[in-house]
Image 1: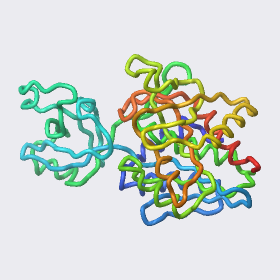
Image 2: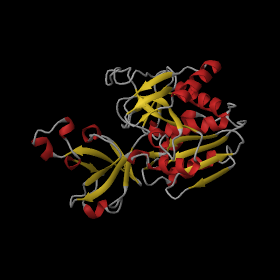
Image 3: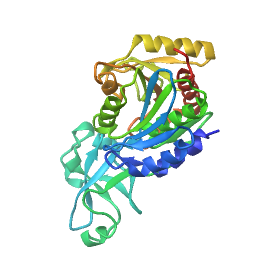
Image 4: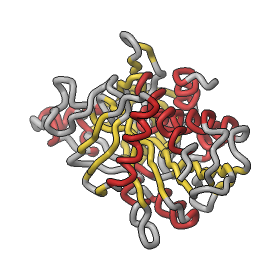
Length: 337
């Protein structure tokens, strides 16, 4: 049986930014190959795992790309200026450790911006830089080049109880959950398409093309959602909390999910004694928003893992929520329609 914590750590070590997902796809494929009948990779890079069945055509999607930074230029002193890959607030990146190839660095605020009195959201990408310890530009170029991707440095660490802190819970823990669901759904009578999508952080691009190709009857995305149970968040923004089970998305800024599919999942959860909660997200979006609009429309929803500090290197989630989410998704895949 797959170990959620260990597998998440393995995927973190192979994390890739949007548009460069081949490395993480290879790692996921090593686990998926024994859980499905065939694996293909489309032109965009989506990893498509097909478990054949005669029932409903069900698509499940978890995005395997990660946010990060791109090397934009290197000055004569060897300091690295960056371009965002995915959504960041630059001020939240300050003093964050990052890695590129075989070298680490730290994000710092330029003195010019500090002297201008810039604070919080006034800080832009022109105000920050990455210090990799290089002596000068030529030294820096021995370790990285223009266009290289920088990722958060770190591994998954266990906290109190069943809580875990890690970079890239979004959405590598969703990839873990999807693999666990496939493992538990080996007797599914349905035609299951598990897609590990690309470029979600750039606009759910992989979900759009893969959903069009698969043309599913129903679809479930697996992603994270904000937590309303800590001082840094607001419960009025999203009522979901860690440890209360996976959250069934009702709405976010890109989608109003299928009420019928959510009701089906609630009934399955009740029958299987799986705790679930509801997600109302006023901002953001997931692959669900593109899948639901594919062709003439797809009954779609999202099973979300409640996560604190999303898009930071210290995301916090609950292992039990992931286990319950996998069990719920597996039960859906095994349902007879």
